[in-house]
Image (cartoon, rainbow, N blue to C red; front, side):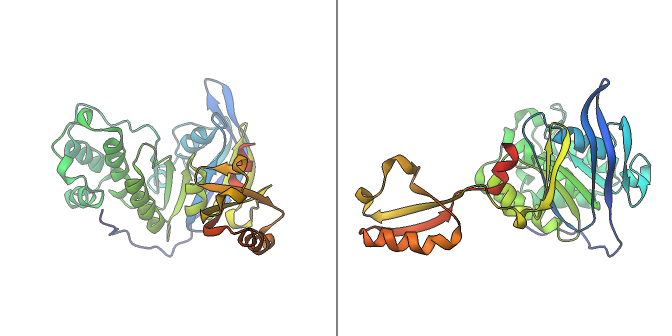
Length: 293
């Protein structure tokens, strides 16, 4: 997949702010008093258990849902204003592309809505490597192919803010990695809110985490500042397995709980003293897991 993105950087200040936002459906509140603001170009990972309100948050920020109370603002202007909406792109976790359209027809339609050009359509066909699919009907595509066509829409027209709801769901690992690389490059000078159920993916690409629990903001923090409640080390070995407790095995790794990373050298020395030949050592605990507890 090509990784060339022809999106220009901007030096103008950017701020997306949710101010005491409550919203939901048919009068039933899902979000309750959510307040935060983001200014730094980066990926902000939005996490929370199913039903916590992540998608509702995205729909409210995008202006699809009107808050019951509070406001969503871009650079101090209500997101309901067309000028503010034009600076934002929302990619739903539901692809929502009409099955009766061919891939090229669908992209041309979205290009017309976004006031993108013919050249933009050709560019994203190459960018997402979906050129061979251009003449096929959406109904004929696999789930992964549909996701790639859907993701192509966010690159048709430049925006300042991107709301990406599980953009790598249903993609094979290779394509998912390529999509993450594209989004990482996008976030160099854009603000990206990115939801995912893959906590290792979230930790890999995110700089900040916005955690939603029961419709409320539970945490807004730099991911680098989070520490797991338990420090777990996985050890993969080439020899000496008989000296290791089988009960602590997870896949190819033997798992050890330590007080902290400073204890790792001591553990390695103990294992080598027992004749264990170590092939790989890695952290097994993810601090983001605690946000789902």
